[in-house]
Length: 406
Image (cartoon, rainbow, N blue to C red; front, side, top):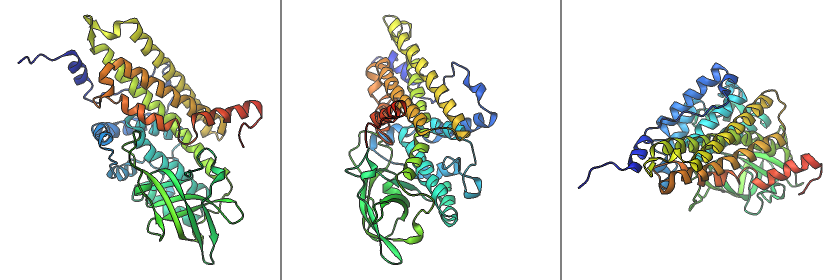
C-alpha cells in the first residue's frame, strides 16, 4: 500500500493549524491604537484556542457550546462599550468592531451570541432601562452568568416590525403579556429576554422577561442549515405576568428597538469582514499548496484574479468599517451609514466565500475548511437584522427622500 501524501492532503495539513493572520494591504493597522491591537491579539488568541479547533464539529452536530457564554464573559466580549461600573469594558466602538470581527472570523454563530448579548440586550437595558435595571441585569450579562435574547421579529412580521401583534395589558400590579417571537438567537438558553410589544394604545414598549415566569417558553428551532453552532428559537408568551417595574422607561415607539439594531448592525459590518478575511486567507494558502499540471494553482491567471479581487473588496470594506467606527465614536454615525456598511460587507463576504470555495475545489465543501460553513452562515447574516433589500431601500429613502415602504 502506498503511503505517499497526495497534494490535497499536503494542502489540508498546512491548514490544520490555525495560523490565521489578517490581510492589511493598505496598512490600516497604522490607524489603530496600541489598545486596539492588544484587544485584537487577545480575542484572536481566544478564538484560536476556544473556537476554531472545535467549530466544525459543533456545526456538523448543530451543537451550541453553552460553556462559551461564560468564557466570552471572562474575555470581555459582552457589552464592551458599556461603562465599567455596570460590568462592561468601557471601550470605544472601534474596539467593539474588532472584537466582533475576530469572533466572526471564527464563526458567525459565535459572533451572533456575543452581538445579541451586547447590542440587543445590554444596550437597551443600559440606554432605556432604569438605574435599578442596570444594576440588576448588566453585571450578570457582562460576566456571562446570564445569557440574554432580543424579541422583535414575529412569525408574520419580519421586515415590518411595526405590525407586531405581541401585546401587553395593564392588570393592576403587573402586565399580562401575550404573543410570540420567532428566529430569536440565544432564546433556548436565555435567562433574560428584552421583548418589544404593544400596549393597549398600540404603542411599542420594551419589557424585560425572565426565564421562569409562568407562561413564558422558548422552544428551540431545529433543522437549520445555517448558524448551526448557534442556539435559535422562539419566544412564546401565554398570559405572562410581567412586573410593572420590568418596563423599560427610557424610550418607547419603534425607534427604540431600531436604535438597538443600529448597534448590532454596526457589529455585523465588522463581523462579516472577519468571515471574508478567513475565507480569503484559506484560499490564498490553499492556492500556494495545491498542485495541478505540475505547479501550484496559484500560478494560474484565473486563480490570481479571484485572489486579487478578494483582497480588493476586503480592503475597501476595511476602510468602510474603520471610518464608520470613527463616526460611531464621535456620535455622528447615521442609520443609513450603518445600513450601507452592513449591506456592503455581508454581500462582499458572501461573494468571497463563494469564490474561495471554487479555489478549494471539491475540498471546499468539506468540514476540513471553514469555507462552506461561513457561506451557509452568511446566508443568515445577509437576512437578519434588516434584509439585504431593506437596507437598499433605507439608502434609497436617504438618497431620494421618498419612502419605498411604510
